Length: 631
Image (cartoon, rainbow, N blue to C red):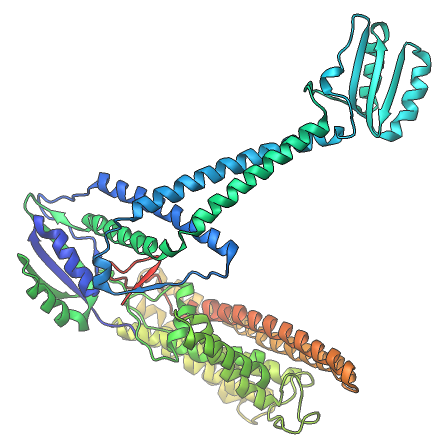
């Protein structure tokens, strides 16, 4: 259900606007919105202070991230939402925070410099490593007046080719250590010889250090060890600040609150001395806010007005505990806008039924119901997905009972499993496929009914019947026609055909009376042409059977693989492992596939006929925080 909203219109002294914002924050009942322009009004925005707060927030965030990362690397640490009293939050000053932040940033800067130096040392070690077997200093490889020297690397497989080449150049000699080659050549031959080396793929050494590669690498390793020790000491300093994480997070969100207060100035319209403010609130909260404003001592005048058609208020959804988790399904697509229907009750019904049909197993349902239910109930922050899966676990158990399946085992294998009431989906493909298509027709009929209700709510009764309610008659005729064709009921073909044609004609010709201009005729044609969309949408529900059938088959295969091992103590362990891994995989893939495809059916086949969305959830002023939850 979408809660009824109201609008607050308020005027007060410009000098008192910050005190007003504090009062509104205390109430937790209003969301500020852009105030309409008046003559000679403008906005006031302290951009400099706003930028300063954002800069401090960035530094606090950097400090929190640095400490948390250090703690996570050393111990089991899981960030959690901080519960804090509203009054304690308002007393937050962050007196010691700046000192801690500067300390953390300074330490992190030193660590970054150490990382940079270690990276350079690693690059140096990598560069000198190919020459570690060279016993001479690099500086010793210097030519003379008559001799040139080539020091470099050459693939060992090329040495024979180079030896053959040197037969024509007696004034050149070489030796090698592994793939390190040292060539001494008379200047008259060196240019040709060295060119041949490069042709063979040799790389010339560019180092001229007055030391050996081995010593250079050793020095780098020693320096690297010292730097790593310094890094660990700095890491110890950061770790010692772990108890300050909570305070820094509270300070961060306090700065965010100050930022929200400054940002709120964009919603004010002001003259030289007076401000005007507009805000949305729940209609049921008017008395509470009236009391707080009257007791605030501020020089203000205000009134509450009804929501008008030109307003675009945020929405508050109020549903029972079973429907509540399914709001996350709708909100993933888009929350409803204020002027339409809340579809979550219908989403709960169809989503849970379709999901349960796909998984359709008592064992899988028990895991979803108990495991996800405990996660949802015991978690500090309600995970709506876990609530959805827990409720879907119930429908999975129900369908598991109807199909007689417990982790893929039926009554013939395990007597405690109830006998199947519904036909076996593996051997009764046509029946189950028709049942899925029938379920699709039911949901499409529900979407058209809701379209009619929405149009009635908007005081368009003729459109409600022509575009919504009367289509139910068309589908009723189709159902009678289909029942006769399938042999379920005899003698309903003609009457079903007549009903379907009559209602289709009424819905099509009725467009002449609810539209204007050329649309009177185009809408008539599109209504009939829309039957193609209805047919394709109905066929989309065949995916329910496909997913259900694949899960049932995989479950049966897992059991068939595992049961032969249950003939001895040790072999039974193998059987248990196969069951655990096989059914865990099947449950995970089945639940994932069910969630994705059932969501798709809601978003495309169900929502497309009546749902508009594009609503914004109600966010009370001063309640948008990253780390804390105000109690």
